[in-house]
Image (cartoon, rainbow, N blue to C red):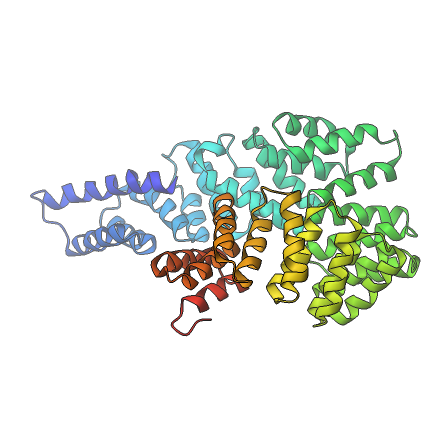
Length: 469
């Protein structure tokens, strides 16, 4: 909308002033200077200065009402919602298209944080007239969910689905939110979202049909599990909060509540500790608290709980891998290697555990030939199309001096995943060793760009520096 205005309305308004300036009637110097300032501001994209220029011109020529109307989107473009609202209240948009005027009011209200007015002003054709407002509303809905404000999210999502009926994501979130407060009204909304292609809505609809009729806890438990699977952490937290209210002695519900709270940006420690208090011999509750300590940077504390989880469920590969990560974070390389190996041996047909073992061995350059390369080969055999596995195997061979095989593997990894910063880094290091400088620089620059602020990106930048490794 702003772009269309700048391409048409703005320059139409200034063109009218140009005609006045070329007329035989003397023009006040103030108008001339304002026009010049407006032209420069418009050419440079300075919406705030341009709005000021238009106000100055309007003071000289009050009958140019179009300039006041033109100033509204300029105020919006400069982020001045209060100014835009003042202009609207003063009738500056009286001659504008009603949908456009409503759109301006919606955007202005959003800028000043008046969500109620924004929702009331949202025009039915908002998807066409003001898509920016819908984008801002989508952000607002997500913010409300992150703040665990279910009622606020529902209000915004309802408005979004009215303005944009084919928005499957908004419709799915609306149905999912209503499932916690009004399951009957949620059903048709989820059905519609599923027909539009929403996997979340389809899963909720299908599982809800299998839950026993009238069993609120069963319905909530099913919804909570699906929210966890889809990483809808805020909805999961709200769901398990309801479950713990209905069933306060349910340790698993407290554990899942803690995990969901933590993932949605809240403190889940109290819920996780409550879960352990209720079931101290449960591997689920103990491991969940261990993962909490790992996330907050206390690997020693994490290791204690995760070790206990492994003892309680020695055949759980995920627990063994989590313990390995805690050992690695605490600096115990050999214990980490042993736990990664244990995870792979528990589930020898699952590629990810072999890859985790290989990645740890190769990245730490510990037992590369004895452990890292065999584990990487197993990962590639189980997932021959995995760029991650090929990258680890290729880098392992590079460390062992087998450059020809390393190059073949790393080229395959880059082809399979051109966005892999790790594969680009390792291929760049290989090319540098082969003294193919231009190719090496290109790969390392790509790794730096793709890796950003991650350790991989930093390693790429170090490799590009004259004194790099």
